[in-house]
Length: 394
Image 1 (cartoon, one colour):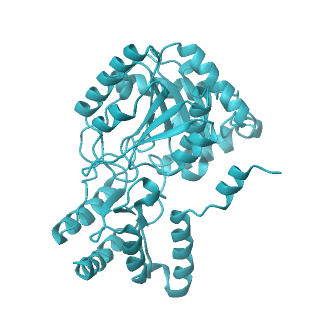
Image 2 (cartoon, one colour):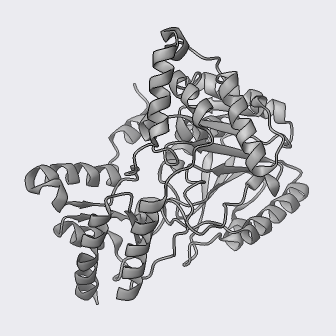
């Protein structure tokens, strides 16, 4: 016998990937310029040239065993030291390389953390809707339960829902800001209220409640207001990070776990992170890209195209009468379907060769997600289609 649960996951359909595959097929039939594919969150802005130049320099000027060989399990000292120094400079913290564990991207980071924290099948991870669909797979795959907090209409942090969800079995709360799929950024005030509540709840329950921050979009912010750095507000914080979006390196799978140095039993948690990575086979993140990050950790993304696309689509949709929470970060719009049926809206859009993802998998029965990490021309072409659609439904 094989695992029925793993068989289910291996054969379950991904709406995002199905739409993406359909878009590739249609592109062959009618030309890629005629398919408005907003399905996948694949950065359209190339990695900064310095990243490519750094790769070439490392390969040209080092023994292949340096960039092809194994690093230590937790990652190269130089890379982790450079990340710690970058964080300390930006956020006035006191991290060292020992607070960091290099990973194969944010997905690996999250799985490692869930594995490290889960001690019982009764343990619950609280997740806020709308959420990245793989969270449920990751949490349940590592033996915990996902407790879902429903979304607010404005997609802001639902503190009332969190208060209803947290209980004696709560091991951690997972937040994602800027958020996928809404692009909403939680404010300092929201984070302060949340962390004040969690501190009170820790005392009441006599248990540590970890706050896990999934932050692959941390640098993708358009408002000029930086994303609140969670460890400033809450000691028991663990950050899962990736350069997939900020440096446009989704295929290179490079990220880290940061266990806040003020976290309860920091060294024990770090040891559990190392043990979980070992058990999952996630030790030694890609060596070449550890060396690249060491030299490029201070490089900031160019947000010009993403912001332009956001402004074109958001302004146009609001003017037409769509209900959209304003995205201050990431590269997504979460749009309420005019008829309240995201599946039907997605199918109607598909008939115009415009691909948007139903929000069901993101924890919403009323919205669709649009990824605007595409050429600006496609955003402009999409507006007349959205206008036709809202007229059809209204």
